[in-house]
Length: 259
Ligand SMILES: O=C(CO)COP(=O)(O)O
Image 1 (tube, rainbow, N blue to C red):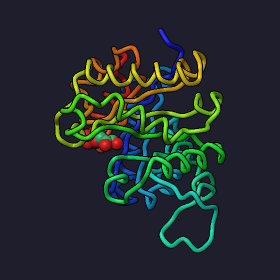
Image 2: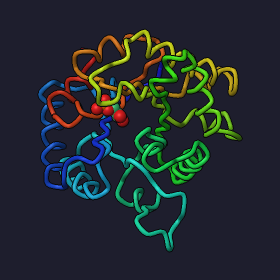
Image 3: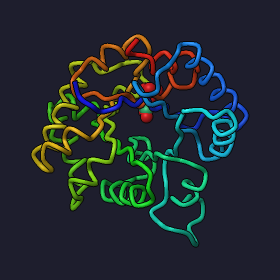
């Protein structure tokens, strides 16, 4: 049994306005409370669009909730002439504690490279927040059987030059692209194969302490029906959930996987 605290992270993507965000967070808090959720057994994180963060902060603070929140992306710059960008200090000011980077949708639609993803992770860590570094292969790579090498290369390129101590503070999310939003979940064994290989690569590169401390999530059509099976795997420490995080009851149920 590892001493890593499981993390259930809901990536809302480009869904829900700030009023709907209020409603979802309140509903989630209520569903978790009704289920007697023990936050020490599973951390609960919501990752709304930027425009919802202030509303989420207001609900979380007013109701004293244990739900954490973060952002889906961030700039590598501090401030200045970067139209459309959001800085780490804007996020910390709003109480964000996590930031996602390198999601396959941003790599694909915004041409984000491993180097840029790594620079974002560095910026987020330096700002005192936790980076959630996403990786994952497309269907062609999976079919070619080179998915493990592909994913390890993404992670190694993003984290080049990092210290073992810093790597231990991040979260890695393995999201096979063919399983995102398709209803096609990787089997628990498929997910474990890659998550286990990631942990072994961390062990080889940074040593046992880092390999044991770094949390590794699975993402891709994770839902109440498959979460227990996924969480039973040795190297899966939580999930990065898209669709199923948009409903309070289903996301709360996932966070209570241990019950
Ligand atoms: O991309 C994902 C989370 O970041 C996964 O999305 P789905 O859970 O909707 O497949």
